[in-house]
Image (cartoon, rainbow, N blue to C red; front, side, top):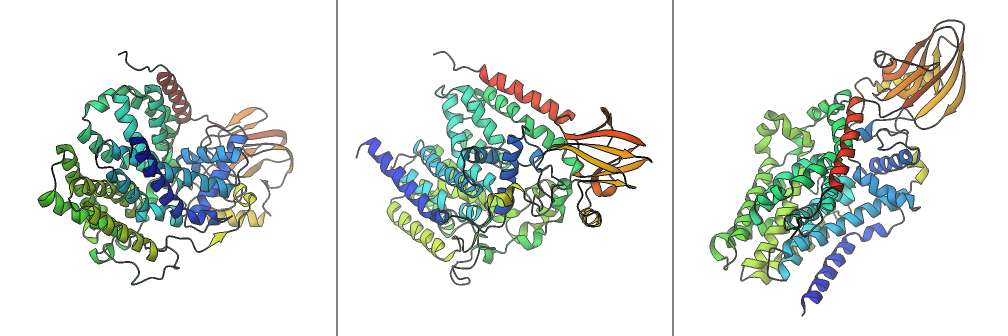
Amino acid sequence: MTKSSSIAVSLFIIIAVGLFILAPFQHAWFPQTADGEYYSARLANFYRSIQAGSFPPRWAPSFYSGLGSPVFNFNYPMPNLLGSVFLGFGASVAVAMKAIIIFSYLAGGIGIYFVFKRIFTHPLAPVFGSVLYMTAPYQIHDIFHRATTGEIMMFGLLPYVLLVLETTARNKFPPASAALVYAVYFLTHNLYALMFLPLISAFIANFYGWPVFRANRKPLLAGLLISMFFWLPALTEMKYTVLTTAHINYDYPTELLSLRQTLKIPGFYTPKTTPLTLDSDQPGLAQLFVLIAALIVLKFYAVKISRKTKQFAAVSIGFFLTALFLLNHASLPVWQTFSAVRFMQHPIRLYFIPVFFGAYLGAFLIESSRLRYLIAAIAVGLTVYNYRFFAFRPVEYVPFEDSFFYHYPLTSAADNEFDTIWYDRAGVNRFFIQHNFTAVVASPSAVITMIKKDLFSKTYQVDTKTPVTIIEETQYFPGWITTIDGAKIDIRQSANRYFGLINFSVPPGRHQITTRFTQQTPPRLIGNSVSVIGLLLAAGLRRKSK
């Protein structure tokens, strides 16, 4: 078989496996998932924001029954940007969500194949590693239980970051394009952009050496600068939300597992039609098998292979075992002592480690063991068993029309972590029920005439014979600006009043009032400017002359 035909057959197998896993997406509606509704609503609001000329989007206008939410100021933009492309071509929200997931998932399987193909010489090794990567329980859990587009997209992007780092260092990839790839990486998922760094560093340093990072320093810097329109406001304006304290309330003791739970065998305790709950609380039977097999082969039975390949197998085992420890009850003191680890919110996110390192160990076994075909057969059998008895396939679909997501009236996140520090949900509900959900309320009463209202601004006239307080049906957050007769007023000082809604005093007389959302906060203005500098830096990067 020629080299090109071998690659074609390998890619056919990888894509076929991926399409088999993704088969439930043939249904017209989107599956019922833990977070899919929130991500669908965010995508729809993100697209509406772009259509309204608000770029980069920072405010989701429909959440909380039109009070709005600053979710886009803190929630990674790249999946929504990709989804907006599909929406722009006329796709429904459900189709756009599926497209993000399908594209990212298949791209990840193909990408990891080419990453491993550069390392391993046996033709089966990269294919086997790719299949393990795609069928890891946490990957499928992300798709059909959580539908968390950012994490799914990061698994799709990770292999290409590894490839671009290496090829850019060899002067085989345009540094300007590399800068854009790195920017996409930084903008795809807040937590994983940080959590993947040790993995990326270990892999590149082991196989290609630290000079790769030195050769990539300018593209990496440019990519980081490009992402500052998001990161600078996200980090500095986080103090205006409950996001900084929300992680403290997570019940870590109940989320950490015993060894028996981690090693549980599916099929003996849950029917396959049971919707996913905690069924992903294991790294995967095939992944555990290759971990144990790699320990044995590495110590006793490895054929002659490169030092780097063997060395990274040991590194992979170390990462894998560390993840298993941190997911175990024995690690509770770590979670209780070190606040930094709690920012990942849920320990289950550490299963990204078995996804990648389990795939590498599988490929390593094919490369290094004389029993490679037996190992592959056992791992495939365990993967099929996992799939057969895990509730990977969705059992319900939600027939929501697009209008539901474009005008989504509920919270922006399951744990309400993007609420502002001023927002009082119960007080707001009582207030607007009392005032019949009026867009602008005057206390005491006044004559209010709406002149113009859109997603991010409203202009109206107030006629009053006495001083009044105006309360708008908009949640306050820095960036909202109000003018009375063209003169800007300070609305931040009164944010604690009226449950976190925009409110201010108006003197007697007839006044024209405008309230609008802007980019005009120092972090946003600086972040936007730094991103422009990053784009200019990237545009000026050139390959080294030979």
